[in-house]
Amino acid sequence: MSRFIFNGHDSDDLGIMIRKPIVRPTWGNEYAEAALAGGLRKLMQKSNYYDNASLTIETYVHEATQAKMRQIYSALNGEGKLWISTAPDEYIDVIMSPLIPETVALLSAELPINMTCLPFAYAVSPTELDLTDATDYTTVPNAGTMYSAPEISFVPTAEQVTVNVNGKEFIVSGLSEQVSGQNTVIIDCDLEVVYYIQSNQKIDITYKSKYNFPLLHTGDNYIKHDGNISSMTINVKERWL
Image (cartoon, rainbow, N blue to C red; front, side, top):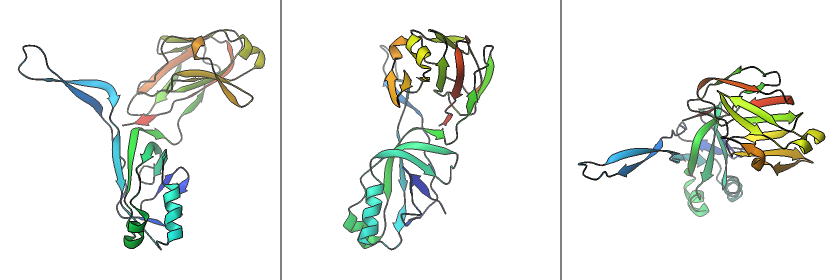
């Protein structure tokens, strides 16, 4: 029988029984119609964005007491991460829709759970590699079905650090403070920010970066750096459509 976990809340622990196997959605690019002057038909232009998807989990509640229903309604609201047992190696970011009125659920014990699923499915245990010695090109695989936006972390030993991904450079400079403080600098290619950690706080230094944030295509990628670091790691953050 299927089960799910939303923000740490397990459907089994909540007494929720799944009526049908849960099948995660897939995502596709958005398309828009475009008319050309003098043309006889409209063209469909593909955008770089992906549509959100909808998911409904058909459930009923075993022993649907008022206390149990309030526990469920408290747990299944807002946004967060969803793990489902039919795709155990992945998680998806979702926004829960309001559940049916509590009195209706109490009378019927049926509880459809509707949500909006943001692109994409992400690896529960993404590939993490040590790049400390990668002063020559090192192979970094991406096993996802689309390009990924990795997270690269390093401790600088010079004011400028250059990372080269598939022949394209990304530079972070003006790092004298981070060198003296031996701070970890993080390049978050998904959010397109660069920051460092000091006293458990994230301090934005994106303005010190130059060029496009690195992306990893599917299959093998090749990465190196200029050696101005004492340590470097990469989180591939594989994702699937």
